[in-house]
Picture 1 (cartoon, rainbow, N blue to C red):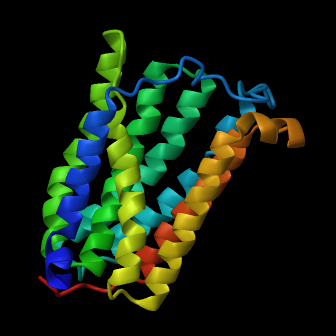
Picture 2 (picture 1 turned 30 degrees about the vertical axis):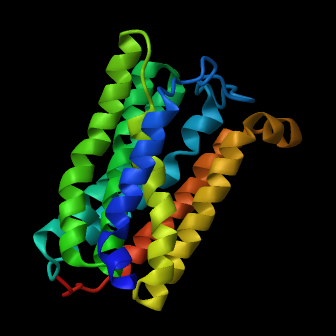
Length: 253
């Protein structure tokens, strides 16, 4: 039974989540999605704090790209792609989110969400490679990377037609965050890597809480929760960078 779960559990979990989302029906974006608490100009920058709080993503992405290009030559090409594309995704998220918050709209949101899918899919497949096996990680990456990009385009063009469905994007964002803790618990990764990934999950959860409590945090602090969401999510990406720095080639096929 344990062998069966280890070999097929990941695929069965994906099918179960896809089935659940299919039964749920279309998920549409909230009409007030582009409204943020305390979204005021700062130093003549529109929606200033929500723009400036993206700077950590850019800095971490630059450092991460240097690591991905200069420190990964001993890894297989597919893993170097995961690390490089993942770090590029963090960098581009900084630019894309800044662009979005300068003038929030569905058009600018496209450039915020697209690079985030590069991060979600690349990180997830790296963890699968390290904690399950290399072959599964590579196969998943070839499937999930285009699925991630396609999920955002599917939503965007659906919105243009009058009703974008977020279900594929929800899968790409949340399936990794559900499965990664399971892999950390059941897999055999390096303790330092596991620690960084655990911190990453913690920061990500805090970021989602700040996002949910945007208005409440704004009333309490004078700065909207979305700004704190950016800062705590950046802490999560720093943990991703540290995880990559501790990676060793996984020879398990």
